[in-house]
Structures are given as structure tokens and as C-alpha cells.
Image (cartoon, rainbow, N blue to C red; front, top):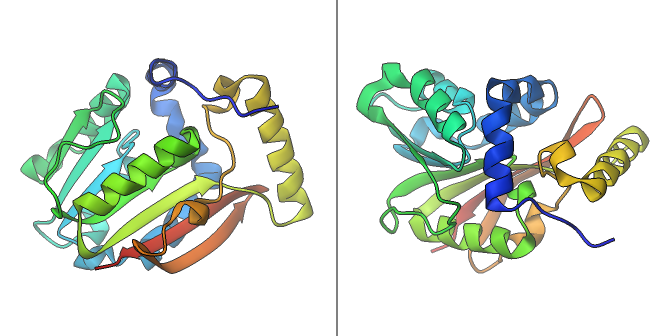
Length: 221
């Protein structure tokens, strides 16, 4: 069966309905996010861009604990509910945090080479392959030389239990993508062009049988 994907409108409607309940996914996302933070050197980043800000939980963690004083964050999301939740959660950071709702375009309205980090946590695994390529092309454009691409996605299992979990997940996705929020397992490194990216860190993290791929890559000059 060929892969099916949520349209932009379907994804927006799903995540508008999901709202704060997205934070419940931390039961399997949390360990992978901690690995990403540990290997992304956010303490040296001055401008961070996040595709798919969700409820703003990750952004708040960065601004509160990991980014240098005065560093700024820019986040986009297709969901009005998610952008509103993120703005509310980040309100205490003032002008350091800018959040906007996207129309679904993967060409971002920011200047070339204007960010130190590009983050996409559990976002690319919603997109068709051609859209993943487009998102990564624009990530390359907006990052400064040596800037880092910081990614997490659902991926294929490496243990018997995780392979069974992903088989069940994929079955649900093939039946109806909205049953799993549009996400399906991907292999992020397959999309990283060697002339554009140098992979600095790559690991599969399995939490409660759910495997996540963590990738940190530097932009090549």
C-alpha cells in the first residue's frame, strides 16, 4: 500500500483539536529530546528557528535553561491553537520569542543565513518525501555557515519490541493517517545531502518500545 499523508488543512485541523494533549506524547518523546539538547550546543546559539513549535514546551526549555542570555527564538506552526499555546507559554520571554502561524509553506519568511540552529521535532515525519527535501533545502538557506540542523522523527525499530510497535503504528497510518497524527517512521539521514550537511550526531532512541531518530548535522560551507 502506498503511503498516505495528511493535507495541510487536515494536519491543521488535527493539531487544532489536539492542543495541549500533544504534551502527553512526552512519554516517548522526552528521552529523544534530551539527547538532541545534549548534542546541539544550544548554549552557543544566538538565534534559533523551530519548524512546528507545538505547545511551546521545547522552546520554553531552551529559553529558560539552555540558550545564552539574550538569545532569540522564532517558531512557526500551521495550527492556530498551537501558535496561541506557544505564545502564551513564552509570554514571559518578551521580544526574545517570536511565534507565527504558517500557511503550510516550507519556504520560510526569514533572511538567508540568519539563524544558528534549525529545529524540527516530530515534524518531518508528517511530510511527504518531496516536502522533507524542500524543508531541508530552506533550512540550509537560513542557517549561517557552521549552523546546526537539529532533528527528531519517528523511525524504524531496532529491537524486536520496537519493530513490532512500529509495525502496528504503520498499520494504523496506512489505515488512516489521522489515527497517529499523520506521523510515520522515516530515516532522516537518507534526506541529508553530503555536500550540504555533515552529520555530527546520530542515534536511535527507544522509549517504551517507540523508536525515535535523533540527528544533529552542521551546515557545510
